[in-house]
Image 1 (cartoon, rainbow, N blue to C red):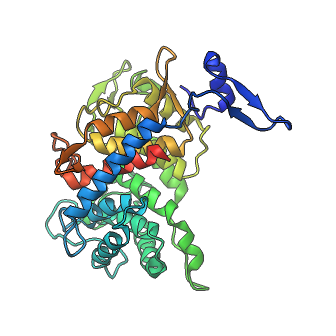
Image 2: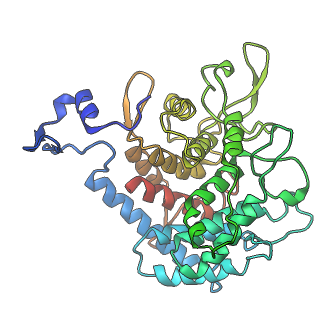
Image 3: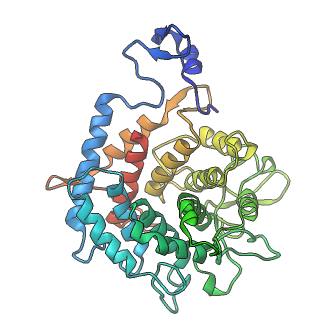
Length: 390
């Protein structure tokens, strides 16, 4: 495993490629050859990525409805995810796209502070936690001060959905607390942790005397840790994460001790790693290091490790966000080969873009986790490219 490689360490690893110049005060190290520094995309590849992003954003502009929405209007998170890449862009239609999408998202604000649509009779209801977490994160990212109260109320709503009980789900978050069942999972917990961390500054804007909203971070971390496979799971799964205590999305197996264990898989491992970082767990903590070790041993951009093509584009989006947050520039595969993960992800995602009338979109032929939805998959792909280029 190779984490957060400094320029000096990388130079020692590939010394023949570099010439180092040191300034007079011996504190500034600079690259004087034409070889790019670790973690920096080459100019040609960056240009390819920028073209793909522009075509993808253009396609989303052409697909946005007059009311500001995209995709299934029962789930506002799908519109929020689609508008998120515009917030990170300089697209000429950015302001108008965000204005319309924001107006649409505001129409889903409920009296309880959540941002969702109630769907009676549906398993998981209106996915109130999932929708609220994503929508509040994106609304906050717009930087619009008029949305501060909405985000504050959404934080209070999410904090109230944390599950506490004498069971294995304790400390986590599920799709909808109103289902009145003990259920939480790492995906919803990741989205909630991300939302609460990225919007935390709105708590300083509450009126004096108003109670601040937050989750129980210690119990959340305990839940995340329970979803991480331990060494007794075996070398192939140790350090990786699973979805929840009862749903083996990656499949179950029996370890050497005769215990049934759920297999680790890529997208949820990166989600678990990122959730730990958002929860202020040190990047040198054994839980983060173990997750990175699993990621290194199973490195690939050809599939979502352990899941094949299922959830592939969410995998790209959470991988880039997690490795950036963990400050990892290079991945060391078994055999000590170093991989520039940004370059590999960008090359793969760009190659998967479909061009139609000069516009670009992405889709997954395997329709699990809603990935036949071109809007959703295009949003994931754009976010992955944008994060890899930072």
